[in-house]
Length: 152
View (cartoon, rainbow, N blue to C red):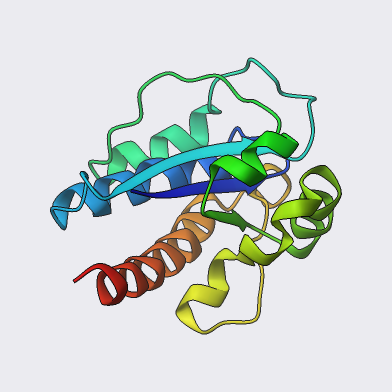
């Protein structure tokens, strides 16, 4: 089974949005038996907190299930456990490399999976949750196409 860990700063908006969206895309593609998805943070400041309301609302507007969850920080063990560690921005990627240095070869930026060399802006600061969702969706669709190409 291919295991994917999405990572952002606090694990309360971008990475859980990516986790839940990707899980739904995987389900719709009939690949739930082949792909598992989770999320984490590079910081511990939101540890234990649920996804923030505007992020949950973006998913809800699109019919994406988003059950309650608890934010958690990335660990070195995650680097061994997951096949892909996908960050939302370059700052996340730099912190990911420090927290799980053995997994550097498994790390990428989400938007690189749809051919873009850019970051998903943090809606915590921009307040543009719809824009973040659209970026996350493009990245997840690109990643899903890569996975399908490898699994099918």
